[in-house]
Length: 77
Image 1 (cartoon, rainbow, N blue to C red):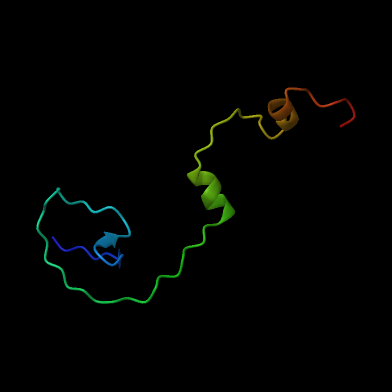
Image 2 (image 1 turned 60 degrees about the horizontal axis):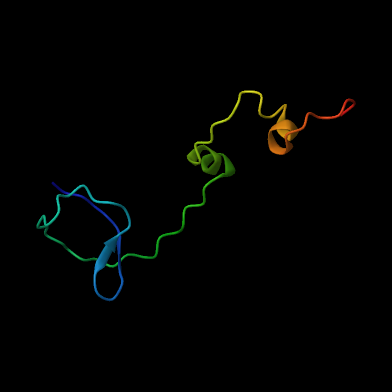
């Protein structure tokens, strides 16, 4: 099996940037090549909101004050 990955060396050990699908104590063959620091991925608001996996009632947006503050909106609002 061949897997490309990025890791960070903390002065003692290499820490993979993502979990590896390896059994504990698996022996591996490493070839070390330094890489440029990765540009941080900037998630969009929509990606962040979807990642939160929020769950709520279907009428959440129309009854926001009621759900947040426990009161129905005043007439004329």
